[in-house]
Image (cartoon, rainbow, N blue to C red; front, side, top):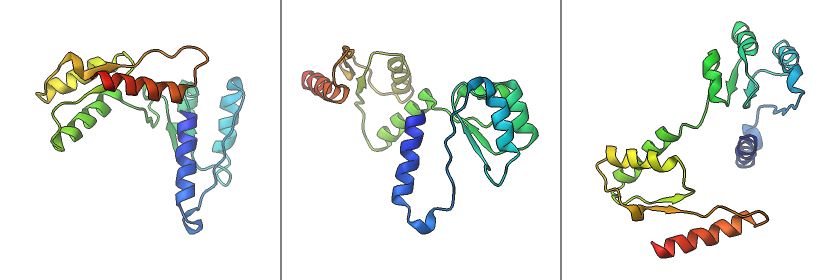
Length: 168
């Protein structure tokens, strides 16, 4: 999650002109056991920090209470944050799959293929295809092999994907 967020932020900064950049980004790493004290200090320093992006495993009930009590702007990137009433953003696989299948059918596609690791995504895609009254055939599901230790991931995945598509 952290890599993806940093990559998106950097891409946004690269595409924006200097006149569009009016913010300060501070990535802070801290001892997990001291997070409450550290975040409380940030909350009480609005000239230094005026919003938080909190990653997986950071938010608990006392921290959520502190954020909500001070009405401090925040986003929690951990679905468990919903349990504490904080602003939560998380990838929702079934909704994302539903949107993808809807988009493809709106474009006129009727044979949608899954290419990836064998996982629970398969069941979600089957459900979405069923909801859109689309065919569900075994050959629509192409499973990539598990990577072995020491392989170069990008090259291996490209070759595995190519090999699987040739068979389809």
